[in-house]
Amino acid sequence: MIENDFSKGNVCRHILMQAVPLTIAQLIQLLYNVVDRIYIGHLPGTQGEALTGVGLVFPIISMIAAFTNLFSMGGAPLFSIARGEGDEKKASYILNNTFTMLVITAFVLMAVGYGWKRPILYLFGASDVTYPFANDYLTIYLAGTLFLMIGTGMNSGSLTLCLPLDFYNPLHHSPLRLIFLSNFYFFSVLFCTLVV
Image 1 (cartoon, rainbow, N blue to C red):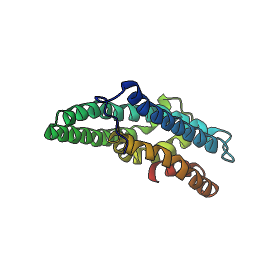
Image 2: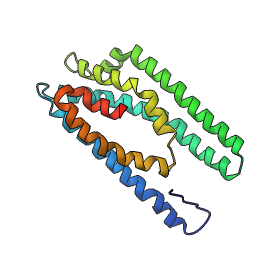
Image 3: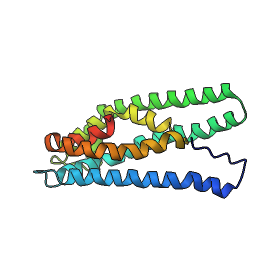
Image 4: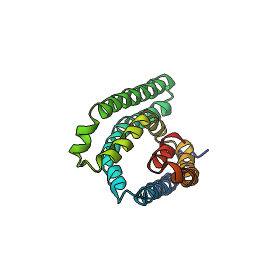
C-alpha cells in the first residue's frame, strides 16, 4: 500500500512519491488514447470519417470528465480532511454525497446525451457523412457513463486504487482490440474501454 503522510518526513520526497507515479500513469493513459485513434484511423473503407466521428464526441467526453472532477476533486480533499480530524461520520457523509452526486449527474448527462444527441453532434460540427460514426460512438459511450464516472470519481486521490488500474487497462485492452478489431472494427475500441 502506498502511503504518503505529509506530516512526517521530507515534504519534497512525499510530493515526488505522489507526482511521479501519477505522471507515468497519465502518460500511459495518453498513449492508450493515441493507440485508440490509430486503430480507428486505419479502419478499412472509412477514409477517416470514423476518426472524425470519434473526434466530434471528444468535447462531450471532456464535459463528462469535467463533471466527474467537479465532485471527485471537491470530495476527495474534504474526505481526507475529515479523516485526518478523526471524524469518520463526517468523512462517510462526504463520501456518500460524492457518490450520490456522481450517480445523479451521470443519469442526467446520459438523459441529455441520448435526448439531444443529434443537435449536440451537429453543433460540434458533425456532417451527414460523419454523424453515423459519432452517433454510434456516443451511444455506446453514454451507456458506460455511470460506470466511468463512479470508477474515476471514487478513485480520486488514491494511488493504491488508481495506479494499478491505469497500468492494467492499456495492457489488458490492447490485445483485446486486436482480437475484436478484425470482426467488429469501430465498436471494439469503445467496447474494450467501457466494459473490460
